[in-house]
Length: 244
Ligand SMILES: [Ca+2]
Ligand SMILES: [Ca+2]
Image (cartoon, rainbow, N blue to C red; front, side, top):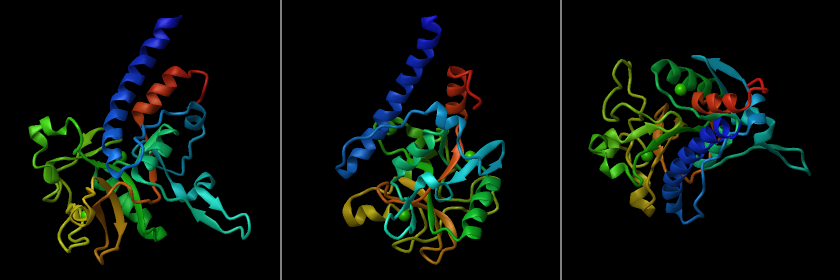
């Protein structure tokens, strides 16, 4: 019974290794140890938080889950954990989810409404700039500040950043950031040579309402997880006894 189990596992590991190599390349920029994408954990997939549903996917906000809250043993004070961009993805991926990818205006409205209603300052999404090894060869991604952004949870390209996405009623990228110009602006690069390669949703940090921003990946934030069809399919196939 070996090969039919090992073969997809090998393919998965190979795919994960490829992705991990990309992630390690970019994450090493800040001088820290290279880190890998997390593999899904079947038991966590089966018990993943299903805080709300949209478009057939489950979602949760990290600070609404006890596992992402630190409790001070002295005072009992509860503090939501903040993590960098890769850690946000990995905490989601362990649950067969990934940091949220916002592919439609309806999904964007759902995320913006949640942030507004809960008065959340910021979140990480899975949005990522293709500025790592291999991206250079893709002529269709140039210039990368316009054409090089993608949703890493599904490896799908975003619309060009310099205009309202086709079919959308407004531009989700902010009209201003640290230096006053429209996003993405890679502003931190001019300050400390750290690229703003990751995408978060900020709530009025620059008196700009709730909007998309390119942000350096090392910054720490809470996150929203969304079901990953690829991870769920894989783990369901390999764990038919689990109700995932
Ligand atoms: Ca999505
Ligand atoms: Ca920016």
